Image 1 (cartoon, rainbow, N blue to C red):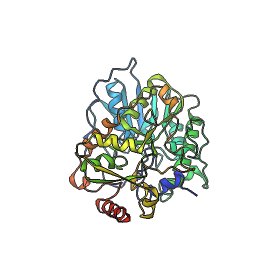
Image 2: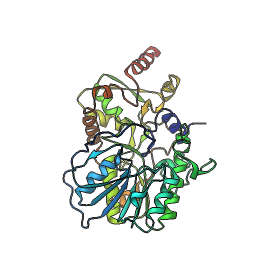
Image 3: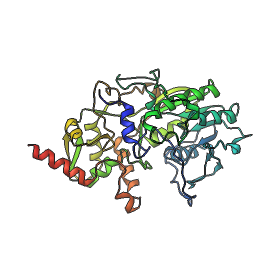
Image 4: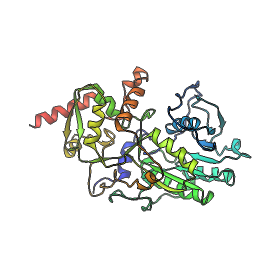
Length: 393
């Protein structure tokens, strides 16, 4: 039987959860860090017609800072709730509350009211339950950031928001914690997100917005999913490209996603939305040539059959980020319907812009970090694959 989405996620999460399709958080043991600049406000953003009081749960991860900057540019009043272990210096006034959802410490949220709550990092249903107990009746809209991994199957092309959801097969979802998920994240990530969606509607009936992103990419993505491609193509030379280029890819720039999340709050867009980009069907060939066009290194793409890659233990999704070979079971993996989200105002910037911004951000990282990508083939493995391909004749 061909691999399913959960199989890809299991493989990708063997060493890190960074390959999940939407943000998640693992317990941190490092001491608090010194605040660092969170980047400037986006340019050319008009002020919203009505400023909102926005509470963001988990605003210092990947998409959170993009949400904050866009919301500030729109003139909204921001409150962040997190553990305070990843402090940022914001380009505007931001209230920061501390607590820990792992231990149920939400005291700083009690007795407060907001127009909207954006819940970014939640995978665990009890996090939604605990937030609901504190915020029920205190927010006018609850925006839950889910994932397309809630889908029960990837076999059907064009699945919309009514698709069947993955079933949880554990003992008790409310007893799942970050500790119990260690080693099982790929298997349980989608089912627990699906249950978290349902829990959100329990506590915030009629005012819940569920957003299911596809692979989130762009500047700030520390997992190096997608980042591998602009970095590798900018390096030039002979590049292993997966398959024959006809497999499909779906991704969304974190800045596009963040801006649209804020706009769903402004328009009070309730319901479920697949946040999958771009606005057309994107093949791996179009994606990689599009990324290559954003550089000047002149890289040469060598398309390597999926069977050859498998024989040489080159894994889809992790060694070859973004890519999953098309089979009967994966035909819809990167072909989810995004019509509803587009109708609700979701827009996508050009791929070249995402590639250039990602590359520019990556080059600001310390040299030792740039030397060790979290995804993709190492130069040594890539050379070995290309040599084996050449020797095949």
